[in-house]
Image (cartoon, rainbow, N blue to C red; front, top):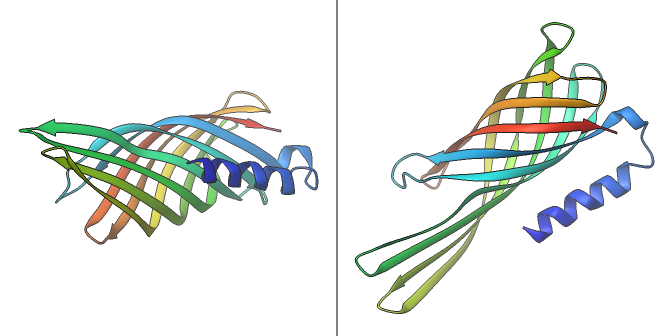
Length: 175
């Protein structure tokens, strides 16, 4: 997770001074993610992002996300899972009225899964990385020129039997 945050800060440091003040924005929010079969997991997490406005219809975003961070025990077996992601996406925007924007996102997410299974005090660990295609659809409500809120649904496409759907609520600020 530290690597993801460092990448976001580095991107802001590189692009921030060179761009006009209103072209860069940040987002932070909470999210709920759920996988499908065969894993059937759900958990709350968070996302932090940086975006660049290309024009009125298009933006690019880099986000760091925590999808799952949970541990469950049953019958002497403990399973822990920590899944983080770095996502790069293009956002297309359609203005619905003066303050509301419909947006759709397409991109890729680099997921890192760290899992631990403990049976009879013996722990086995797995660290796996996967690149997933993703699509999302959301509504952005502009409160004023700087502040906005978002509600969004994102789908990570299936790869190696893992897919996830995420619902996000976030708050954003335009610099």
